[in-house]
Amino acid sequence: MEGLSNASFYIAPMLESDLAAVVELERLAGLSCWGYEGYKAELRHSPLAVMLVARGQAPFATRPIYGFLAGRVQLSARHDGRELHISNVAVYPEARRRGLGRRLLQEALYTGRLYGATTAFLEVRQSNHAAQALYASLGFAAIARKRGFYSDPPEDGLLMEIAL
Ligand SMILES: CC(C)(COP(=O)(O)OP(=O)(O)OC[C@H]1O[C@@H](n2cnc3c(N)ncnc32)[C@H](O)[C@@H]1OP(=O)(O)O)[C@@H](O)C(=O)NCCC(=O)NCCS
Image (tube, rainbow, N blue to C red; front, side, top):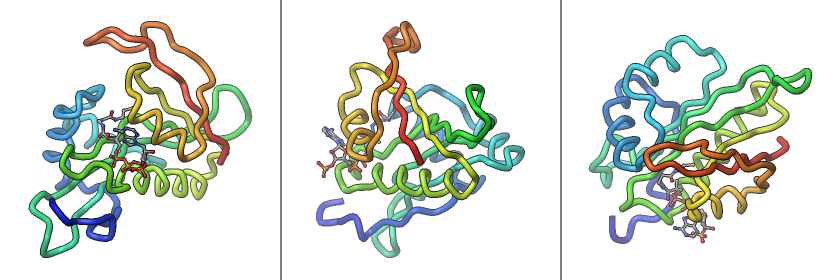
């Protein structure tokens, strides 16, 4: 990965053929676990799913994907409209700090807008300062603390929001 820049990667829709790698990265990154069947069901049955991957440009790529994001646009419980909920985002350790996380999120926010969402939400572990810095750099703001939201290990979550 030495010498590879942001331009060595591109963002694309997630395919079922990506799911083995997505599940591997989900586990490696210690994210809340949807598992293979969870992602497959989302891809097949949720018309407003926002499922993205970061791929390496040929001929540099040695992995099928370098990062992924999973989210979904849904009706808001609070107002008459739609919201984008971002559930999981991760980048392989060797590809971090090259702007892939930012590009995955930017593409997800753009797609969410196209699907009619006016707000986006996500939860993040209180101790996950890297992810919080990424979200804040895009304009997300913490709006609530969710006590005991996470398990394994147990931890509070921060609910973050951005207007689209
Ligand atoms: C969080 C994560 C997705 C970020 O991916 P990434 O591709 O490295 O992020 P980017 O390169 O796009 O970073 C964009 C900005 O976010 C901030 N940021 C990202 N990682 C950071 C870190 N380790 N420390 C401080 N700031 C960080 C910086 O402001 C960075 O901009 P800069 O590199 O110009 O300073 C990645 O660290 C990861 O996969 N972590 C494990 C899984 C995880 O925690 N997911 C989030 C669950 S809510």
